[in-house]
Image (cartoon, rainbow, N blue to C red):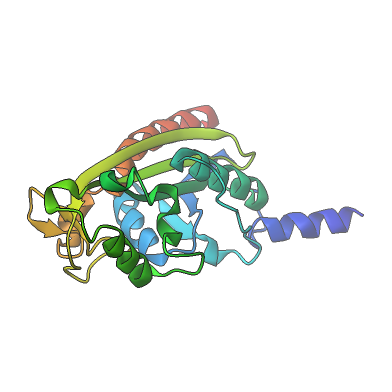
Length: 230
């Protein structure tokens, strides 16, 4: 029986022989398979000595159903459930687009706005179709990003959210980014996220703003944990 227990723990730790401790905070797991999100967030965390994994690095990762009614609920579920399962610190992130003329849609359904199996192109076309009769001055929208950090027991330590305002163009512009980025114009820059370079987006985007809040709290948490361990 004891060997069955050891094997179960061995698998749930992502084939790591050492059970995670609070000091493993430097090794975070991003609760998604989305490689583009990883690239964006990793560039913001790396300067502070944090290493970011994704669920693609763990064969035993859970499939967490995003059935919450808010970005916070989904981010918390992705962080806590996955953290308990993997026995690691997990960063749950949920983000999406809210269009004022559509009463906040697609919101939490941003990744499946055109249907359960939708991709970026079909979602973008569906959005443009929904707004085809809406004049430019009424196509205002904002991106939302929520981040939650949970430890191996599923306890939430960090919870933060930010937005970035803009409007939806009449046709895609630019090939950078992902999701609705080619349609989302930052009015002050007269360019979409699809046109803006990574250096600009890393400062003004909803995800970058949330990450700045997150990093402040993360550094404070690491200092507290290191103090307890010394």
